[in-house]
Amino acid sequence: MGLPDASLTDYMAVIPGAMAIVLLGYIETLGAAEIAFSEDGVKNNHDQDLIALGAANLGAGFSSGYIAVGSLSKTSVAMGAGGMTQISHVVSGILAILTLLYLMPLFTNLPEATLAAIVIMAMIGLDQTAKLKKEMKLSYTEFTLALVCFIGVLAFGVLQGVGLGILLSLIVLIKKACHPGTAVLGRVPGERTYYRDIQRRPDAETIPGLIIFRFDARLIFFNCKFFESEVKHYIAKAREPVKTILIDAEAMNDIDITGANCLIKLIIELNNKNIVMYLTHVRDPLRDKMRRMGVEYVIGSDHIYETTRDGVDAFIASRR
Image (tube, rainbow, N blue to C red; front, side, top):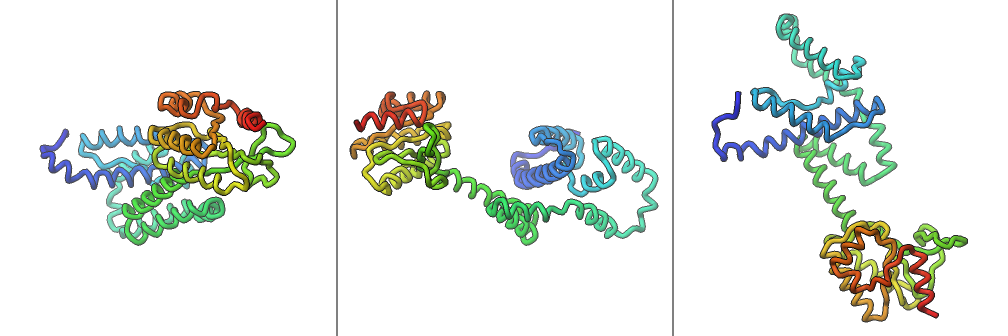
């Protein structure tokens, strides 16, 4: 028992393989847990699973044991046998020990294909084809990612296929983060404070010379240029000369230094073109950061409003 006598070079050599084992083991554990808990309608705690796996594998590592992870096939067998709690695994463990001690002669002449047949029959119950078809209707992007990961596993191997799926998921996530949703808002007829996307509500009313622009993300380093380009795009697209642009910051819950500098630069650039910027729905933590980063000083505290209606009223008053 204990740590082996090995150099740092030896440890570094096993890290890539160890990380691959951890990744695949955790993924299989999550898959087994999600399927089991979805059957019972119980919410699973992934953090607790990771803590349990870490503790179990620490013990296995120090005692020369085998890696402990969840198993899709064993989970399926347990579910098929009616197992609902951890007691079923305790019973399975006891039976495995008794088999090793006393029943091995009964299994000596069984072909290895028997085990494969048992695993295949168990995994048939985990067929997710119907779920995949549902995902295709709900989100074509997620369906494509799942399909690419599946094909990658078949073509290149489990680790390579999962790695490909993770890489593509990160690319999609970064793309969405860099290009979040934007919209020009208009007032819904008959409502004083109800503003919605004019693309979704064609009947929404806009005011000549005013653009109400909503940005559906934090304003940070990797999307601030997109924010700037979208603002300029809508200004250039306006039918009449724009005098004021009102930024609805309800979904903008954070800003970093790069985003703040980009916003300051845009405010100054628009001011030079006689276009005023207002901010609305700025939450207190965000406003505190804007104050520290100089945004509030440049835009002016009198150009930051509680609601969209307040900003619209200020624009109307300024045009009288």
